[in-house]
Length: 342
Image (tube, rainbow, N blue to C red; front, side, top):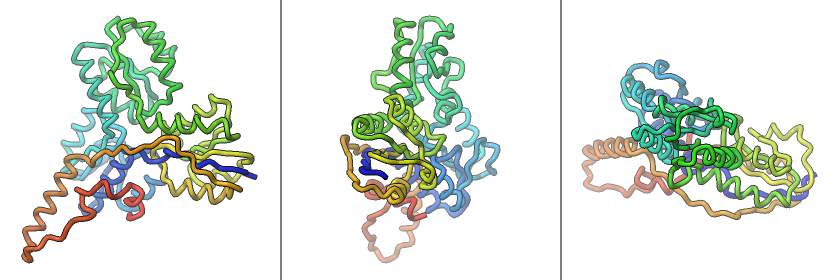
């Protein structure tokens, strides 16, 4: 029996995920046709299935879309070559890349233009890593371990970048070793690691002394979810990644536990799990405040404004009702509300 369950905040949707989900919902709302999305919009099985039910098709190659299709590029970032191919086929391509990923792309381009070799710390098969490496494939070298860095023979003019969703425990040993191997190593002034990934790891770290087990809600292909699990296990506390409530059926949960969620996990799944566990006591644990907001993609905002302006031409009343939930008021609604309205 679970005596006490700590509901840890921050958890779940980060600002980049919020932006991407709402952007895809807007496309479905405005354009009455199939929307094609390059990669999963975010790495969560439930969200992907919900959008698939509403006429979104997720593809892994530009050749998989018909001529003139409307396309959204996922939050994880897309290589310039792939984006160009989509632009050549589609009637409109909206890039919902997270601004923090865009920052890494800009850094890769800058270092490449300086003829610097770039070590990119990331997971080789992750969508974000694929997109970043595509910015400068001749200059970038992906590594997953200190051993990978040790094998590199790329001269002394070297920079270091990172996949945004890494755990600190993955990033810091490689960073420290790289600084030793390359005394003149170049790095961005601000860390590449995502604030949301770092905040979720810090929050769960603070509760670990009080619990026997941690449940991390999120899908298997979510890097930041896996990073949370790894971080907890590295602190000698049992951790389980949970996709949905069915995944706890065979777990022998007892004592005190904590529950958190990766940055692409819907909060309703967290509450379904809590209800199933039915702890003797539930306590909200919120050591960190998080209030970041990323605006919707600029092209999407411009397109929707153009549609609204066109429709206003036919308004003969001379009166224009105040818009409370339009695109200019994006801060007033959440990705959870967008998903609920599908």
